[in-house]
Image (tube, rainbow over all chains, first blue to last red):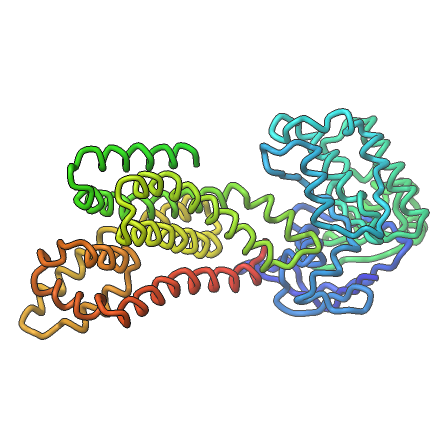
Length: 237
Length: 238
């Protein structure tokens, strides 16, 4: 569904993305991991058109995303730190998003809205919300329009354990529906049961892109965090 | 925004009340407006855009054209600023001096508001850092409101031996505040007080051709900064 080919992006002298090429297909749940500053968020933002690569192409369903914006209605994005107009209420933010994406044919997916209890908070202003509640709003908005692709940047960071579980179950349900899900996270233990593939980045370069079973058999470890740790130990000189 | 409207309202009302001749009141008001309106427009818009930058990021990740996002922000912001000006300064003007001159002043105030909002948009899209951006906005205001005129006077003084009439006319087109001021002053009878330069200006700007040229230039002052900012916004990394 998403094909990244030889993408390079420099911010000044820093090579945020260094000749990255990956291929993501539907019904995959991909964990995008790597040390801080490895280029994960830059890669995601390039896919969303928020960052324009210096060279290389990104195709969404075989169409080049450069100068295109309509493809984004098939993507649900949950940013790491969601920021919204301070004096809008939760209900107003949702209404605004719905009117931006006014497509009557889409069945709205309000499962998370109800499960997180946001329907009871719909009159609270965004500035009064805690960071975790704001994350819940971001999560709901990402899933709301039933997109084929979900890009979640640190989805469980800031969520309490109950909300974390609710979100993970939701991700699982969407995975069963055959959607492409891309998750960045540092909390590898949370991703253990969810992901089907791993993309590991370091210093802007793609280090590997493997199915999780291959990773497990190569390293002999079952737990994701241990498998990744042994790979990182092998690659660091 | 409400405070701005109230401030304009109170200032305009008091100016008109202090002068027995409402035309003189218009003159004092002119200078006040030409000073305050650009300042408030540029600073308020700059701060607003910086405060909304994360929300703008969110909108960019939605299926929306960047041009539409940027332009709707512009029209919303300039719309409310023009409304504030219209109510704050417009109501007193319409009560005390609803002459063509008064209406011209209202129109010029609105246009200047829009121009400086556009300049604010251009500044913020090019400057990532909030403090630098606000500083640039203040400096730009200082340049247009004060420094420019000082520079022009200096040049005129240095080259006072040369015939500079046409040059001065063209130079004044480089500053929208000056253009606005000239257009109003010519309608009031004080233009005679400006002496030789007054005569030159009246010769050009007083005519219909000059008027059209002046308004076109003001329009260009709106459109060009806005256009440049849209082009930059389309390519910007967020």
